[in-house]
Image (cartoon, rainbow, N blue to C red; front, side):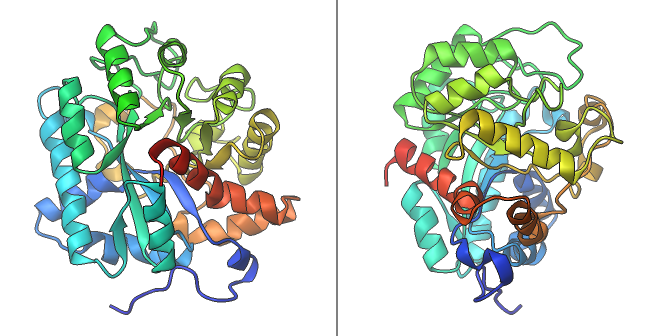
Length: 347
């Protein structure tokens, strides 16, 4: 396979953007399953062409455990996902690089490689604070406390808002404190409002919502309230724009690129342009392998509004035509994530 350059010269309006980082992508579950079935170089074959076409220089890859593996298989499945990524990087060192700090993202971009940072989407695999240290040693740098279900650390926000919500458990608070000691990212996407409040009351470090939009634009409780966004920005944290239709609109008919733009405009108005990035949560290629119990939690079958990583140049051109300055485009495309990584992890 010929190597694809991440940032070819003079590719239209994207040529001024040096770093493009997606703050949330669920590929590791699929990569793990395929490797278990005997496939190799999965990212190079199936994912890298789109990353290259979109000039993506970095991605935060989630460690998400499908409900079919719960309650007893969470640790094993997460460990397999971590192991799968390490194997993929070893097989494709010419294009892939594990990222554990801000400098790794910069170095990967210099070498035309893709930097991949691992982050939990749900704390089910972490049954003790001590175990968090083990995952940290393997390269995991982010802790998302919940997906849209309950776990021993926290209560997630179900998509339809039909369940009574709780916040963090006492173990969840301990886990937040341990993550802060390790200088890990603490992610509140999918967390209940009560849980977000508990996180904010438990730590003073920057908080992120890697893939959440504005609740005032779409009244999904997966989205952030204006008050939550203001507090996250006040703490020098970030929110990532989510391109999934169920997060953009309460109804399938109302989901559009224009609606996605409304979310981004509002998030920047509330948080400032230094605190918003991309966290597209592309899901089209994963829904067919999701367990029925997870799919039934959603209001309708979701679809991607941007069209995957390969369509990012087109989306950036739409933002430019929408009136976004070159400076703003650079920030939301990747520089804001880099600043946050540097502030959280150091160089």
